[in-house]
Amino acid sequence: MKNNLLSEKLTYTGVSTTPTHLHLCSYNESEVNEFSGFNFSDIRGNIQNDRINWIQVNGMQNIDIIREIGDYYNINFLTIQDILNPHHPTKIEEHENHHVLVLKLFQAEKNNQLIKQQLSIIQGKNFILTFLENDGSLFDDVITAIQNNILKIRSKESDYLLSVLLNDVMANYRNIITAVEESLEEMESRLLTITSATDIGINIQTSRRQYMRVKRAVLPLKEQFSRLLLSDSKLLHKSNRAYFYDVNDHLQFVLQTIEICRETLSSLVDLYISNNDLRMNDIMKRLTVVSTIFIPLTFLVGVWGMNFKIMPELDWKYGYLTAWLIMIIVGFIGYWFFKKKKWY
Image (cartoon, rainbow, N blue to C red; front, side, top):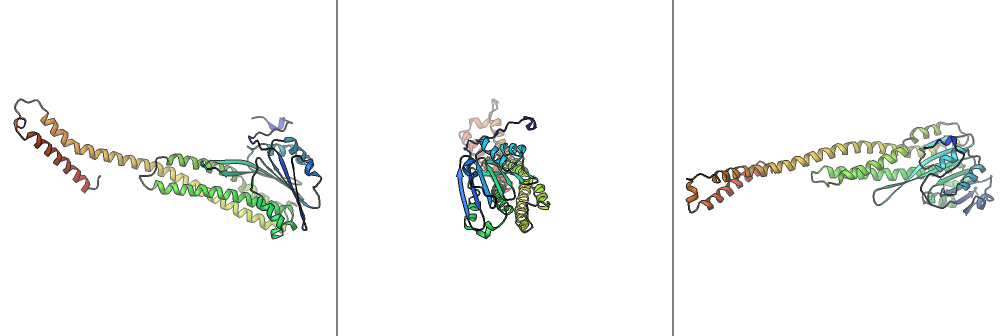
């Protein structure tokens, strides 16, 4: 891994092939205007400083566009590098004129795999910039709220819009970690029976990987978001602090669920091992019972299989039939005894 402080070149290090395209939502209390384009020049003339300007950037392929936006809003080089690095750890930074948030979003696939993409948010006095690696519908409800001026969203500052976006991010985390929790509970129910499916170990490992990915994305927010709440930044207005506390409540719920999942995973591993031991013991018990039933039969066969010259039973007309009857009766008695003792 190269030292990013020794490079002047901006490079997108992810795998997304989504072409870079922009969407500008510019609004004030009385109206809202929306513009789209594939270059910053397509929307730049519609940015108005007396309004809240929310620029959505989807796709990281065109680095020049992202650099232009950074230059326009005086975003430093290192922050642009972080935006283009989808493997950057989750963080919240407070700068003099803006806040930087690097977050992760998750999407559950049908094969129980989690698709992760990076979301970067920059909040300034009158602007919000969001950078997503792919197209997504996460913030569609926010666009609708702005269009319909729900809860008078258009009359509030950019920090309120930031709190609304963060609530959508928390909802994404909540949905994913709740699904993981439900999956763990279902596996726990299956493991409580000795006849549980043999693929349960693979399912535990899959859930563990999902849990670890969500944990790495959310856990750093625990302290960083608290610092943001306690900061005296002029970009967070006192009138909007309550909305950030609401976001923090959702974050705490996600963190508590993550902790519950950790404990459940630990108990599931122990339960899985115990379950395997119990299943093995049950198999050994059945094999032992079968072997015990055949021990007296083996003894009888051994006696009658000896090559002594004088064995009266060998010359008896009904000797063969009698031997079979004795062996059947002895085997049945053994089976009945184990059944009565509930050992089989």
